[in-house]
Image (tube, rainbow over all chains, first blue to last red; front, side, top):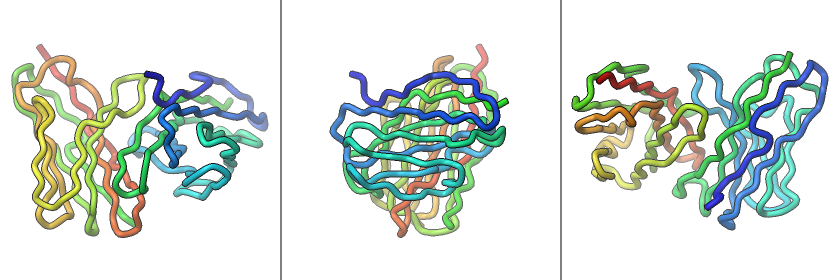
Length: 114
Length: 110
């Protein structure tokens, strides 16, 4: 049971570099989400998608872009990484309406920006 | 925006003790979710609550959706070492947007 798979698991970048985080889910879920988790701040929503080809901004979208070209994949891009983006990034998916379908999470990507 | 206050921030308990944590919201919520996060892993759903007053159990875990729809609690009975982790509450309100609490870190000593 793969569920939600995130790659890579760890990455160290230099300020100004770009990278893409990949999230893949095999549960045929319509909704997918990207969160960041920082100490003492819980999970904060970056961007989300309600279906293939759609994306929307969450609580903290600045500095990030996303794409949902295929239903099973949701990509998070950092065009020019900054130290403030050092965090643990979690992808999640859910099967139905945003409000009443629990989200299933991947194991996270630990990103350090030097 | 919707705000969730989760307490306590951390707990140190002995094995066998019962644990209680809660979340309160500044506005009415329609759904309450409780997740557990182990070190190095993503949050895993423990219990989902969909109706005011609902009381749901999952093994030694019990959670309730408050009657006012502004709070929820999670109880763990007879704690064991593998209960160690961070517990997050989450809820959705009228905006249908999931908001998470800041977590309760649970440590269990033998």
